[in-house]
Image (cartoon, rainbow, N blue to C red; front, top):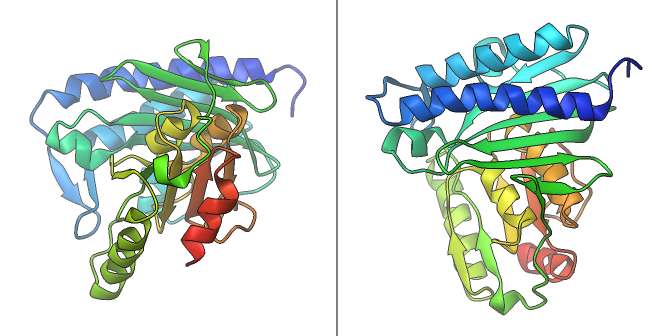
Length: 268
């Protein structure tokens, strides 16, 4: 990492970029949307594309030597390989379907990996004006106030979040709904809020106790949220219980007290 920059500099510039994109999202949220389909139910709008361009242009001015991976760039050009070099991983509008429907769980997600490790995370929901931030080793914050994961110890009292994903083939849908059916007997209730990044932030601030998702879009969905959860005292891991891999499209998160029981339940 070049000595002329600190991780605090990286965070500050990421926050600036997120707020610039957030203004575009907030404006577009109340307008008529022009929607394209990336898949059967996977949507993209002109706001997604505009926000990614704004974020990349802003960060590249400050850190031209860094690498960049974005959801819309990857969709257009193919996924970019993650290396050990400082890499900004951006979802310009996580929760596009929510955005299209006027459901206020939408956000900008900007993560920075160094040595492939999530090191800086910024998730900004401009509709609810909630800014989640974290630097590896320095804690997690919501609008500048420190946050922590829940202290819930019992699965039966836990609030679980997940998503059904974008695939609608029968085998995937059956597997997904069967897993949810099993879990519903173990937990208090279930939420599907439509944003992987905001689900992770929900774990970080204690609104949610458990989260898992399989087959999401890519590292841009989780790069920021992973460091925000970890720095809030939570655990991020593969749903099998193995170590978290940012490139695997598999993630689970919980407070430390529920992790083992959650993994056992996911395996059943």
